[in-house]
Amino acid sequence: MSRITTPYGFSSTAAEVAHGIDLTGRRALVTGASSGLGAETARALAGTGAAVTLAVCDVPAGERVAKDITEATGNQDLHVAHLDLADPASVAAFTTAWQGPLHILVNNAGVMACPEQYTEQGWEWQFATNHLGHFALATSALLEGIGGRYFIDCNETETVDRRTGTLHGVARYALDPAGARRLWTLSQELLADAA
Ligand SMILES: NC(=O)c1ccc[n+]([C@@H]2O[C@H](COP(=O)([O-])OP(=O)(O)OC[C@H]3O[C@@H](n4cnc5c(N)ncnc54)[C@H](OP(=O)(O)O)[C@@H]3O)[C@@H](O)[C@H]2O)c1
Image 1 (cartoon, rainbow, N blue to C red):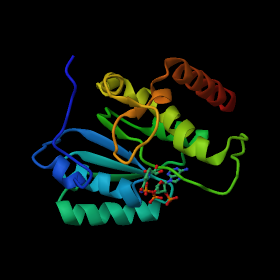
Image 2 (image 1 turned 90 degrees about the vertical axis):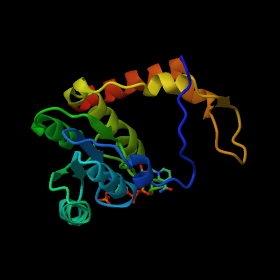
Image 3 (image 1 turned 90 degrees about the horizontal axis):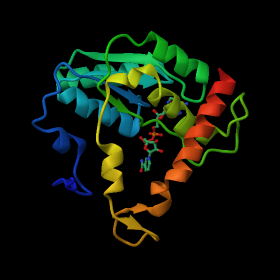
């Protein structure tokens, strides 16, 4: 199996990566697309012709971003839907309401270094938002049609024990199958308890 490489580097932009790609007829979903990297990811995907759904907490902010993207790209196929990743009921409502296929899922939303706080299920907020909410989304029926080489690619990536000045490789613990299995099982158990 050959290793996949790309011509892109640290300063490449999303628009450069998406240049020349035609995703007309494809449906993409970007979480946390009302600001930051999510909004720019949605913009780059819209530029390829894909139908893009912005899954956001703040619907009016998402609608402003969608309008701006439509004006900039000419793509009318922009949609905004409410999704609170820290609330399993919101994720369930979102996946139940989704109609038709999904081809691209970008699990972008996240909080970082927030004050210590917990969801009503007692889950630490950052873990609930960044991991559990996306885990629920990614293991839902939404993804039945999505395939890909992501995990295979990771297994072929060089591993590093310590970060050096250069960005390369992944930490060994990220490729630890036992650790991944524990996290998978724990996530399933937590979400089942919340259902
Ligand atoms: N920027 C960086 O240098 C950097 C580096 C490493 C990793 N990342 C990761 O990349 C992602 C995007 O970063 P960013 O800089 O664009 O961050 P950002 O500007 O803070 O955007 C994060 C987005 O996530 C949304 N969000 C937060 N909690 C949510 C929830 N419970 N449900 C649904 N959406 C939620 C936010 O919506 P609201 O604004 O409505 O809360 C916001 O739209 C994050 O996961 C971040 O951790 C960023």
